[in-house]
Image (cartoon, rainbow, N blue to C red; front, side, top):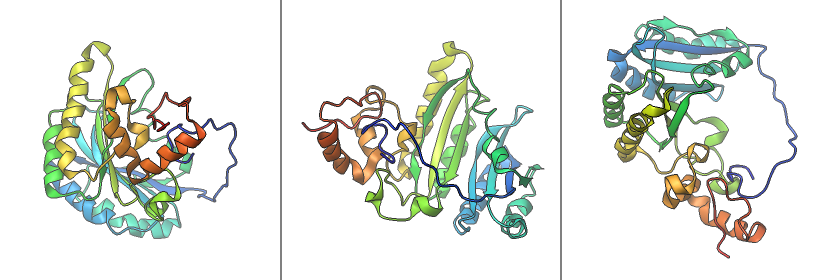
Length: 268
């Protein structure tokens, strides 16, 4: 069930185990100009490679409220604020940034930071390849393609995968790709559905250009159905767990009742 993409049943209730957070965390972002993007990504590659479990980060492109492409580094430190300030000091001192919005805040405020960026009523198209390392060539490719972004609402962001998500054997859940360090979330967003073709094309072209730097597969929640993605991409999304999941599907859902998803068809 955990990571199976809705292929094995319907969850009717949850039991949550709560963990203490806060009362505040150290979170927010720092912004840098687009022309400093390569330097920012190079810094982020080194910074994010040796950080504690208490810190989660992201780094990528967006368009500022003033309408200018910019690169942002985002952080959330869940631990003592004094320790967090020391951990995030290099992030605040690099550049220096155009804007520094890192500050103590409730965890719920961190969760809502990008609600407006992914607003209701927009058109969306998403790609999310896994990435093991942010190489110099990968940075060059990302910078070159975002320079041609077709909508000021669109984003291209490396989300760091760290902590428990990277630990443990592949088969402890349906979710694979534990070795990947980042997901590159390419989100094309626009308002007018008559413009869909060119905005979708931009996301696809960036995703295709990034394939040499991807480690294989994409996050299943960011994949479409087989008719759009093709079966090969869905298989890659589940990674080394796919054949094991097929066997479970054949046992528990041999008629493929649960099929309106990133489907794992049974073999029977």
